[in-house]
Image (cartoon, rainbow, N blue to C red):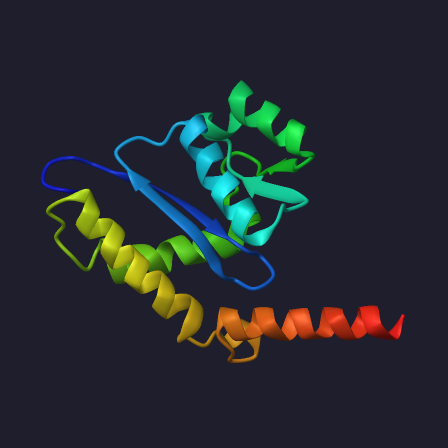
Amino acid sequence: MVGNRKFRTFNVIDDCTREVLAIEIDTSLSAKRIIRTLERVIKERGKPKTIRTDNGPEFTSGDFELWCKGKEIEIQYIQPGKPMQNGYVERFNRLYRETVLDAYLFFDLDQVRQLTSDWMEEYNLRRPHESLDNLTPEEWKNRVLENEETLIATV
């Protein structure tokens, strides 16, 4: 909470690299806001084949579904009440909540955004992950890209 006001976060994680691609923070996150965030991520990283998400109203809205269809992105909804079908994000959400959201008293949304931005940098660039062979998400991404280039060159 910021003062007495609740806020929400929209967390975008790359399943392959475990890299945090975006965390959007505000008191309300509509489908249009989600789409703007995803447009920014696509501009920076490229278009995904699939987006896995829960069944929240921002993801089941006509705007979101039409946007995905127009971008030729498949939506993979998890089953209601089955958060482990999106396990990477659920694990990330717990870690983010424990290390940032529950660790500070926030006075405004800008403070939440700044602390989140700093933490994302730490998470992506300096924090090794056991599941990534003790590499950071950035190091793992570079390894994946190197292997992709090797595969392309040897074909």
